[in-house]
Amino acid sequence: MNNSILVPLNDSVSSRAVVNYLAGLSFCPEDAHITLVHLFKKPEATEDLMGKKFTAEQPARFSAVLEKAKDELIENGFNPNNIEIKLITESYPTVAEGIIAQFKKNHFDMVIIGRKRMSKAEEFVMGDISVKLVRALEGTAVLVVKSE
Amino acid sequence: MAKRLITDTTEFFEIQYGDVVQINGKRYSITGHEHERRFGMDDPKFWVKRAVDMETGEKKILKLSFLESFETHFGSVKIRCFRNPQKEADILELVKDHPCFMRGRTDRDDKGNIIRILDIVHGPNFLLYIDSLPVGHETYFHTVLPGIMKKLVKAFEAIRFLHINGYKHGDIRNDHIIVDRDTGNYVWIDFDYDYEAGENPFGLELFGLGNILINAVGKGFHNIQMILSDKVKYGDLKDRLEPTDFSIIHKRRLLNLRKLYPYIPVMLNDILMHFSRGATIYYEIVDEIIEDLNRCIRSISENA
Image (tube, rainbow over all chains, first blue to last red; front, top):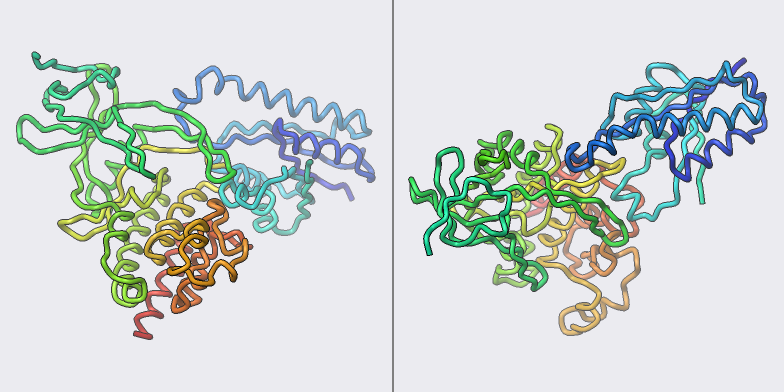
């Protein structure tokens, strides 16, 4: 049976740790169907405050992140035909909500998510995607890769 | 000095006492600017002008557009904050008939700057109000706090109203609730702040509500310095404290108030402990606090 794996990524240290982990994971990589996805969170600030140039550059920036991750997986034996890249331009209130929406559209056997080290206070204020996914997603495995 | 007529408020620092600001044909005479008074500091807010409507004679607050963006710290947590005049304008429209929010309308000057023309809410802020109550804690707790909690629930429900409509207050603090002298309502003011919220959009909002509850239940804040230096008031409390008794964000602020005032019911103390360093589960939406508070109020009423 082929496994389908959803891998949400951005350009953070924890996302790089996810790709490294997946690339080195000991299973039949040529049979795994991987969806590398980046989702945009609705910005709190208006475009005036964020900077129009900054906002306009985001899709290209994250597209490059996904392509790089794909290349790394191919180098490690994954089948290029089984790797899909998705840049979701629709924005969500939180990244977790975006991932959950993707999961609802297409079932995945596993979701791999990075988690940076954070203090209790940071978790309280900023929230934690991995905790939300573990709580919300049913009938799948959630693999949390904790970066340094 | 001749009065200046100002139709472009972009350079708000230059708008002074005696100037006349004209917005969409209406004229306001400037009588000063507001100040931020916190922790003994007194910072002028040059973008918030006191004014008189020259047609009606009514006192107003003119809040001019100030697109400030900065980083602030909540304990060890760094947050990117910014002022968002449009957000405050949208909320004013949303809550225009709501008794728990300041009232006003929005207009634009000749350069398109968003200006909020606000009614003044008369009364002390919640921090000063609690501090001014001339009773000891035990009497306060049994006779005054139940009424305060009922009004706080109404104020918290007002925040819930914002959240379900997709807005955050942005700066929930004890001094951003005014105890309206005329109606007795707890009225939220100043909602032009916004912040990058991460994955927990209402985390800081809930933290702010927690601070308000801690102030209400404790009849003021109690921090470690106070506990160490005032043996008469705090007795042997310092010997019974653990790190988990303090705030998850403000490490010196006591949250486990039941250790100080043992007559505080466990159920109420448990609400406060959601904001402590010992918490293993956090509130994520305001409904959860409201539900717990209502349960406390019912329990206190039944046992009274």
